Image 1 (cartoon, rainbow, N blue to C red):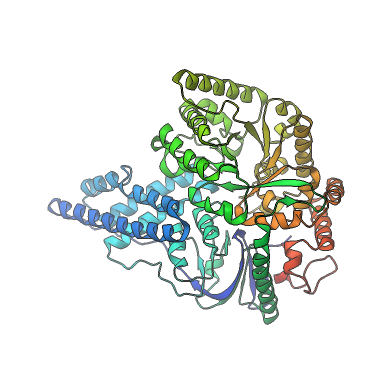
Image 2: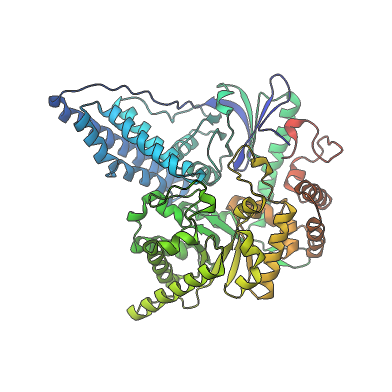
Length: 610
C-alpha cells in the first residue's frame, strides 16, 4: 500500500493528498507562510480604553474595505453571485459574538485590541474544532482569515496575498480570499497541507480553473520557495524536485490533458449515451450559488445534489429564516430550470455541526441527518415550507438525508403532509407532486431497499458514507484511510442491490458520492444500470467520454465480473484492463506510451497510477 510520502531518490519526493481541482501544473514553488501570529498582551489604562476601541473600529473598517475589494474580484471572475463567501466573512466582522465580545474584552481586561482579537477568536476557533470534524474544519480557514486580517490592520501590516506569478502556491492552509486574489497574479496551482474537496478553497479553485491538491500533510515543511514542483490535480499528487525523466513524463501528460480539455468541449452538448443508444443522466453536486455557472460549462443536466446545510453553516441557524431560504432556493431553481434541482434537506451531524449540536464521542453513529430534523422541528418545518413554496417556480426534488429506518421515514412523510396542508390553507401555491427521495448511505437501507422503494419517489446513493459504514473505515483518519475503498465488492453489491430494488418499483436511482465522478467506476456503475450520475461539474465530461466510448452490454458484462471479485484491488485491475482495451480511461490516456510494469502500472513509483 502506498504511503502518503514516497521516497524515490535523494531529491525527488512524492506527496499524496486529495485531488481538489483537476489539472497538471509544473513550475517553481512559492511557499506562502502564514504561521501563527504571536500577539503579546499590553496593559492599558482606563483613560486609554476609548482610543483602543477606536483603533479596533478603524481596523474593522479597513478589513471591510478589503473584503469588498475581494468580493469585487470574485464577481469579475466568477459572476455576480460569487461574492457570497466573502460577504459572509464581512458579516463576521460585525457579528455580536465577535465584535461585541472583542470590545468587551478590551474594556474588561484593559488590554490592547490585537491581543483581544487573538484571545476571542482563538477561543471561538477552539470551540468549533472541538465540536466538529472535517466539514467545519475545512471552513475554519475563513475564521482564521478574519483573525489575521484584523491583526494585520491593527499593526498596519501589508496584506500577504501578493505573490510571484507563474508559481505553484504551497501552504499549510489557504482561505478562499487568498485563492481569488492569487488568481489575479497568474498562479499555476495550489497545494495545501490541510483542507478537503468541499472546502471553499477547493470550490474556488475548481471555479477558477486552478489545479489544486489538498490534505498533503507535511508538504509545506518540505518545500522551499523556488523548488521545482509538479502538481497533479487528477491523481492528487505533488512531486518535489522531480528527476528529469519524471519531469519529461509529466510534461507529456500536461500536454495530453490540455488536448483532452479541448476535445471535451465537443462533448458538452452531446448526450451521455452509449454506442448502442443507452442513455444516462449527468447532474451536478453543488453547495454554493456561485457554482451555478459550472452547470452549462460542463454540460450538467440539472442539480443532483444541492447541499443546503452550507447556508446554515455559513450564516448560523438564527440567520436562515424561511423567507431567506425561499429567496435562495428560488434563485437556484430559476437559473437551473427546465432541469430539476435536487435539494438535500439540512444534513447535520457526523462531520457537519451547528452550535445546536450535542458533543458526542462518535458523531458518525449518533445524532445526525433525519434524526436531527425529526428532533428539531424548528429547523425542519421552515425548510420544508420554503422548498415547497419554491417548487412553484420550477422543478424541485426533495432529498432526505441519512435515513436509517422505515418508521423514521414514515414520521417524516407525516410531517411533510401537515406542511402541505398548512400551505393549502394559506393559499400558497406549490407543486403538489414534488418528488421526495431518500439518501441510501447506510447498509440497513440498502439491504431493505425493496421496502423503501415502495415509499420513495427516487433513490440517491451516497457512496461516501455507504463505504465508510460498510467497511468500518473513517476516511478522515490517516491511520485507516488507505482502507477506504469505494470499489470494494461489498460496497458494489449493496449499490447493485439498491439499483435493482429501485427499478423493480419503477423509481430512478442516482449516485451522488465521489464515486460518481470517478471515470474508473463509470463502466461498472453504468453496467449495474444506474440511471443518474451526480458529481462535481468538472468531472462530468470525462464520465461522459467513457459512457460514449462503450457498449451498454459490454458494461453489463464488466459489472457482473466486478461483483464476483474478492477484493477492491481485483476490481481496480479488472476495470483498468477494460478501460485500456476500450481506449477510454483518463489515466490510460494520460499515461499512453509510458513504460509499464507487469501489473499494468507505470514503472517509476513517482509515476504510478493511484
